[in-house]
Image 1 (cartoon, rainbow, N blue to C red):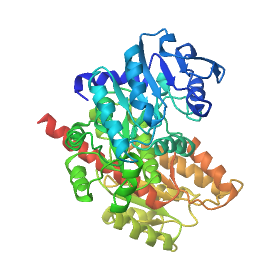
Image 2: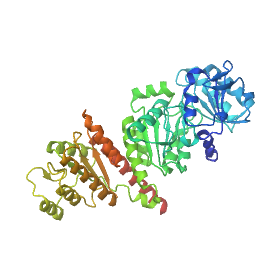
Image 3: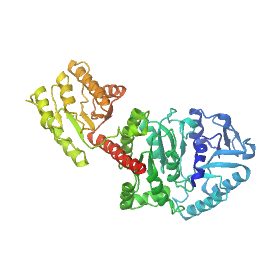
Image 4: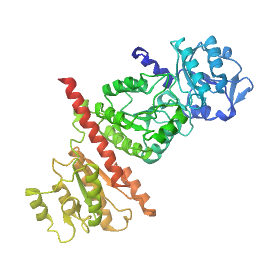
Length: 492
């Protein structure tokens, strides 16, 4: 989409009116979701040739009965054989800014489906003020625009934006991100087969959106109808000034076949994507929805903490190295953690010189270790614990990772003192602008949930495993370094 039309996306996310055509009982999730988001019902029009009322709302038989001359968002839900004729009929009666083509069964299905998409694209080109998302997509979500396709999505506004080829993964991120970490979106779009609007169009729009801190993308491939989208996407990614967390489906040949039957998308090779990641400062967000949510959780925490700062100051808060201090309660666990973190590219600097001497003065170790990882059994609830940890934190350390225990018992005085030490450590690291991450394994102990809830209430960052925390930290560190280099090159 040309750059001068990009601001029109405002009407996709924040439509002044919405039409559902054709309204049916089985499409209940659209009206129910809009009602929950408090979209004005006098501006929601249900068009049905057979129904007089649905979901407590009056239906109209024709577009002529809609008082508005311009429709901001028309949700088109008819059989694929009627798609083209329906669009022509609607455009003959009303000006439409955006179609959300909900219908599936087009280019992802067969040659006839490909032909239908080609003809719809030609129709849109004959109506240059009209754009579309889909076919084969769930639609958009924007709490500030009171716009959604699900009654189960949060109503609170966040600062994450999204564009996804898959409607289900878009929905699952919203739902699981809310359940796990209270992640909140500003705007999100499920775009399906990308007949018209492309991923690059949404990235361009989000890049200047003041409500957006960072973006996540679920991507399956390129539409046959847009042979230049690959070049356009790379060009846009190079210019992005906000983090883009990129989760790519179709990394294998077998998965590319699945993607083609899902959204009709053409995949590209791993080598090409490795080049794209090197040439831009977008971040590969792992290989699963869990990876994406884990990384988004840390980015969201970071921006909440530093959003108020000017960009130049915020850039200085990003980790500058991959150096970690790990604090454990088991020597064997420390060995495994060291293997895992080292293999992932995270450094665990050893203590030497004055730091080592100062640590020995505080606690001449007989059990455990004053190395990195710091193995500190039996003293977690003492004053020596916090003294040792503070002494071990140098300018070289960017993140402190504490392996905690799901069996903590608040009745035990030692455990209460241990938690107070964690709070003191959190306050200390915040003054140093460093990250503190708690690892709390997901053992099936009833008391874990109480401990977890307390950690979250007190603002701790909590992950269930070292690997998941490390992936998120590396993504944050890599993006910060890339963006600093990007800013420096622009300022020269």
